[in-house]
Length: 299
Image 1 (tube, one colour):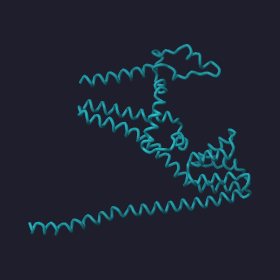
Image 2: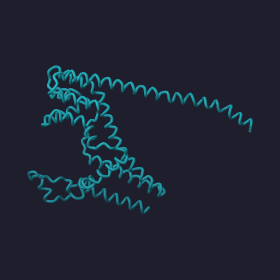
Image 3: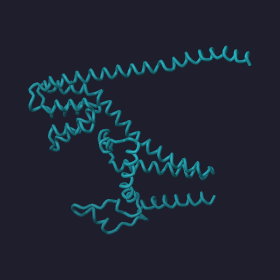
């Protein structure tokens, strides 16, 4: 009972400190923090305040990023986290994502510890749960990003034939490459249109068309996009760019059709698994009846 009260008192103290630090009555800001918003070129963020949620976040963010990166590599995640976050357009930095993962892991560990102490579970069982719960919480957040990244790549591959045909039609109508990309991004509502919107923004910011398209291809990491970007990079060299883009669109459509047929075939094979089991189990039971009867006779 004393251990439960001690743990509850610690959590209550930490939580009360963080909550009260956000109230104006308890919060004290230094002169530099109050004057910094009015200084040119300098601005001290609220994260510089002591005993605040932002200060704890800034303190734990580098450690969380290092620990989360090592744990992700241990479980076979080799792709860079900033690249995956840019791919799915999550408005969050890599350090904030790792901090969220570590926060969920710590929260899971604290919850398991409290439940273990309240229910009076054996110490080995509590230790086992303390090892499993944070790991599961970490992997769940990591898997959410992985699923979002895979879905974005799949939807990009599925939408690319239509978008390529639209670009080819606009180029054949006399549009420049930049104008065609801007029109497709403005009129579309899919993932490729959203990526092309970023491409057009990069072009307006001063980046070249080729560099912006290469950045898109590197971020999305789809082979069909790499081929399309390689063709669009010939904008200033090829006179029949629209025809080449249309041919690439037909190629991508054929690949998408072949992938759809493979998925349908896999689903058809999966359908036969329960049917086979449903046919084998009664047959095995019928074969066991005379066998067991014969064993009983000989016995």
